[in-house]
Image (cartoon, rainbow, N blue to C red; front, side, top):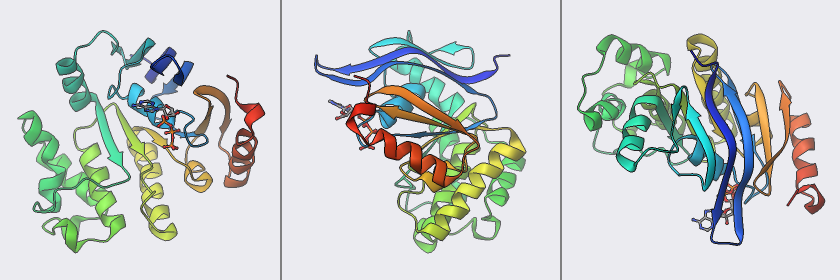
Length: 245
Ligand SMILES: Nc1ncnc2c1ncn2[C@@H]1O[C@H](COP(=O)(O)OP(=O)(O)OP(=O)(O)O)[C@@H](O)[C@H]1O
């Protein structure tokens, strides 16, 4: 079995002739790890996440999720692969307002036309702390609780990797801390792999490893770092001379 959950090799993404959103990014994201991706606005964080998750296709280079290479897949194959191997959590919780917590969490199965494992479904809902609220609608929940529904939905298919794009961007500090602690716990207790884009050094400090992008290139990384260290590295990247174009 591969030791990486995701592998990017010399991944470049360009828009037209001028814009290099990613330039030659090579990195392994190990199984069971929590990786944060940071960088100034426009540095390529979302493009990185989208290419790693098969939501976007690199201009050149290869992407693997586990043993599977994404680069040669057509759109239908990519959709199937994402369904099977990836879970997604976004800043906007993307829940369906008319559905209960449990039905929102069941959506991936509905979309795939497959049968859920009900014991696991109950465990996941319990694990995110919503056992008592399984029949509530999203409008009856706080922002943090809604994001926990989205996390349960991302986990319920037991994906190879959970991709989170600014998952705490819409939450207050205390609620954000709860959601990040949950992601940390998921990695620690289930050996799940999480990749998270964030602007926030405090959020990134929950990760085992922080990757820094500047100008579409991977320019730095830290392991097990606190918010101050991460903020200091970010401050350096903010200066134009740090961007290797
Ligand atoms: N569809 C597109 N067409 C043209 N340029 C694009 C497109 N998507 C992204 N870009 C450009 O690619 C670069 C990287 O964008 P990306 O969204 O990945 O950065 P980011 O680090 O996630 O930014 P932010 O923190 O502001 O969300 C930027 O210069 C952006 O303008």
